[in-house]
Amino acid sequence: MRTDVTFTSNGLKIAGHLYLPEGLGADGAGAAPAPAVVVGHPGTGVKEQAAGLYARRLAEAGFVALAFDAAYQGESQGEPRGLEDPGQRVEDLKSAVSFLSTHAAVDPGRIGALGICASGGYSLVAAASDHRIRAVATVSAVDIARQFKVGPDGTQDPAVFQGMLDAAAAARTAEASGAGDQTFTLFPNTAEEANLGGPHSFEGWEYYCTPRGAHDRSAKALTWSSVDRIATFDGLATVALIAPRPLLLIAGRQAVTSWMSVQAFQSAGGPKELHWIDGASHVDLYDKDEYVTPAVAKLAEFYGTHLGTAA
Image (cartoon, rainbow, N blue to C red; front, side, top):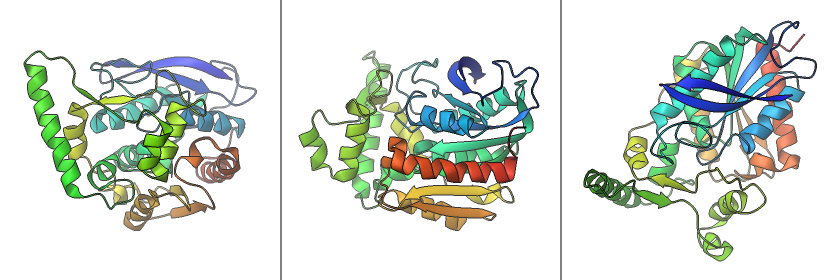
């Protein structure tokens, strides 16, 4: 069962979809409190895409699951639209935990987090400092700062990001002069242009810009003011603080971003596990059933072991 919910994060109304296991009423009344998982979406996603798919599948496996739109994006409040603020994204995850902690269907002592793509990095930071998160997992984890600074494969010339910081500084001055919100586009216009950026660029374009995964509310542009906020974030810096709570990192064998999951694993204490999905790329794990199904099975096993299952 899916219900529309809202909660507050730093004074902003956050829109979410709450997925309940079969047999639980909308308010959870009459049932033993169940374990729950907060699911964070990729950097340009919305709750109706990968996060919603994983939340629904986790509910089918017996967990209460909450997918939500980040502040400034999707159906959630916040201006300017398209702002990617890592600090706010971490706060959104913690606020989602607060929402679940007070829900009648949820056992507040059995709440976990799942971060997909950029929310992988955000969930690691949230879990490091919020002990209410009893188990944390990631799928195709990305530290958004590393991706911007050195690219998805880690080989980007650092001068590229320095140029982006120049543009971000100029955009702030323009906004102060009354020019309005300054933004930059995230995706090429055509498949041919996307192909020029390589397979990772193409599969991102294909997911977000074609019927495969496109959604009207997913971000196609970010504000330039996102860039200098991203510059000082580090999604992996505090991974060691998660221990002794358990950590699971799921990555595709073919994902160019998998080095970030490896780094997170190496930095973590324990218990920890790096689980590979053979044949999968980064975006394959967003929606392709042949890869999502084994990923969900591993997640259900992980959360079942560390959070228990619904009565």
